[in-house]
Length: 167
Image: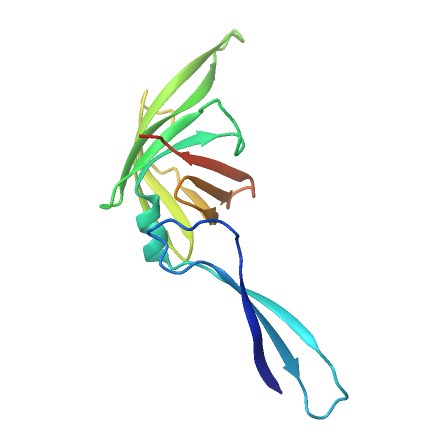
């Protein structure tokens, strides 16, 4: 069997940020066998940016939003090169009598990236106890530009959106 690259195409038609050294591409290949009459198979393979480029792209402050066009911000997180992060999220506290109140929960945590998966752990929250210290979150990076980030929560498959904080 012979594998021959026909051509490559950009996976995204977006301007790539300066930290992305190689844009993702799609490679179109043909698989041909010499014993069968002209059979053609096309395979599509995504070639992602490497973890070092993604790690550099994550540094800074990202805002939590419900959709790419949302205006309401639900929280934010600042990622630093030493693997530490801090930020806040909003939560609704439900009292025993049924009343509720919105609460801003500040947090500090550790982060790391491996094979396009961001792992968040070692949480410390204020008010204390809102986020357990042994809490673990894992997100796959689906796409990333200098201003937007789309993640997949590996616990439930939910798509998560982040926007770089202006300024």
